[in-house]
Image 1 (cartoon, one colour):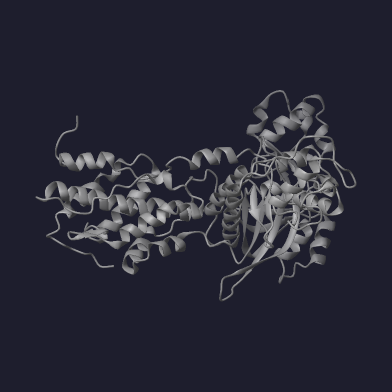
Image 2 (cartoon, rainbow, N blue to C red):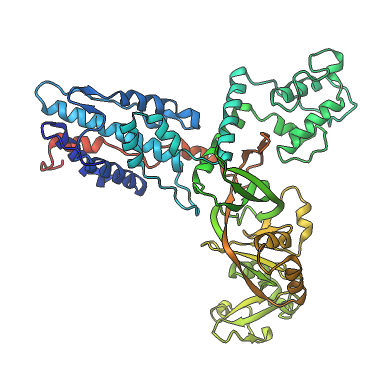
Length: 549
């Protein structure tokens, strides 16, 4: 868009003064938004965008209506404040020009704040996702040229299928809230099929409201039969248990009762929180990618096929994983698998060695040999050292040596390691402790992801290369450590979804294993990174050369 000049418009100088004040923004994200705002107005030679001297543009009403409807994207309109729009100049120029400039910049500020929040999330993610940084200024220019503000916001919202399925679930659960919270299921002894109790009626009513039991199911309409725990009710309860990550025994025990009685309003908010997590993810997840959902303890390999009406995604592989314990959580991040290590060594981190190995070493230096661990020089020669020659009560040895577990069946990495590029030292790997995958709650690692079927994953990633399943198996059996580069890097997304919607429309909930939902909820209720104008308005009113008090 070419620069627009209008020498006769007195609001132009006032806009310039407001923009030049932007260096006082309180944090990095605010300064980034000020740069977007400043670049937008500089391209316009600081001419107001939302009004002329004759009055306001119809785009103003469209912008305010779009932000007022922010709840459709599970964003709170209240956090954007009540924008006061001054669009008409007052008699005599000066004060009216400033008021109009302030109103114009406020509107642009509102567009930028809402657009950034919608496209990349309101909360600055603390871990390691590539930042979604859409050209908000270009979107704004196009929206004003096309007079379609709402469409601009739709373009900037995440396009992921999982995000849009979750939006639909939010709308459905909000309708449940509006209809009124169904009565909680009373506490009592374990209930199972064939038993009769008055509280079975409340169980039926709640399962119907949540969509697990058809409303027209036999005995769902009342009467004495409604108190009987029949097969249909058991089937519905199993479905509820499965989509909440519970053991699906079809019995009403304490854990199932607690999940059932979570208020619908709380479940709605849980869905909304996970929409924010979708906004953190890269706009392009990859043509094929690995998705690990930490609270679900599951890994999926997803392929994307382009279609005229939007890309279709197919899960081609799924398996269980073990993630980090609460004290050493697996970070949410995006990375890529660059290569595999067959029969890997394990260079044991100092903290793990200090906590888990030192107590044994101080009493028995021969403990290392039992675990196939060697003491290795940190120099280029990487020579091994006799552990009996070290005073293990003096930690100075760590400056010269490190502990390395040799390849083998007892290696903590197992026989396969999938190397990710990331600053956390986190990767996917095999494990000798396959019994862990039988657990329902699988938070048990030091932060890395232990994979249930690593050979199958490796075969998939190396498809089309000489590294067939047989070739991989032969090398693993030989015990030789071998690096194998992938033909192309494969994106890996470690996500923290405590709620999502499956391909078939099933709404899933999981326990907040790391307790992150509450912190995210609090952060979303603040004005993270928003632009502030108050001090800049005062500067413009004083004039740029007047001293401060």
